[in-house]
Image (cartoon, rainbow, N blue to C red; front, top):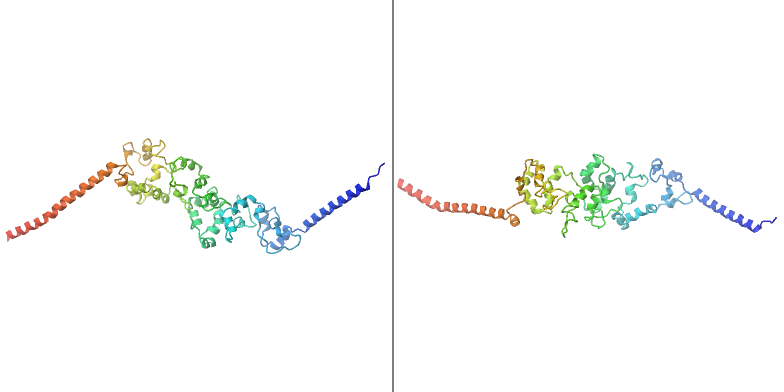
Length: 402
């Protein structure tokens, strides 16, 4: 029989020895690495172990975030550098870095929100967990830490909007959230996004004028479809002028319920921001004058006749003020309305601005005004000329009597 070569045996023994020593080196390093129990021995007053285990990071070790503490010794250097959340959450960190908050941090703003300002440090739960700072019911309070009037942020920074969280609380969205508990209603992040928060002046901002319709229609899809077919839609009306978008009529943080008094009383004024002349002529009509009295919110407003989001040109078959539809529109308030009733001209005036549209009203007004002035002028002059004669006759009569 052939004997095995001793060289091969020596090679195998050497290889196994090196592998064994490497294994010992790795296990030795881990044996001395800090565990969660080691960390809680000093930091148990800062981190509640029971709560931490129920968070999204509950299965992680402390040193997975605090990497400087992962040294093979009992104590770590102080202070530790801030945790880099982007180590695991790369995509989110990249988006946040380009946001207004991220740029402020890069610019050295110490008050700019970091990840832990919104998500907390150790009690990080999923957004669907009621304990989470990003749970819908908690989002306004989370954002309010900086944006609540009187906070260090609002006193040291020149923010364009005032009383943001208070106004939101009283808005239709805030009431739905707090009074009704509707967690599907819009909160701060619904409009401003979670991490890509930008100033409204930035073209890519979700609340930029050019993007606000897309932002609102994420929830109000049906209304969005109607609006995009209306005269206010950029797809329908081609003009260099600014066409109205959602927050022009509904505002931003003070959005009211459209069928309530507060909103209905300002409809004419809201429409008048663009249609000033028609707003003025509306106020000259019965509807307009009566709307300024008590209970005036019940009177017909612009949207009752023209529609709210589905405003069409009068010559469109779908328009509420089209000849084929006007009786139906008026019948909502005037049950006995007919074709004759619907011939009423709600905005017609005798002003010079409407001379071309309603010439008969313009000339009739001035003809009647001229007749009135002429009549008073003639008889006024007659009275003035008669006064001396009257005094003369009275004097003559008195003299003859004596």
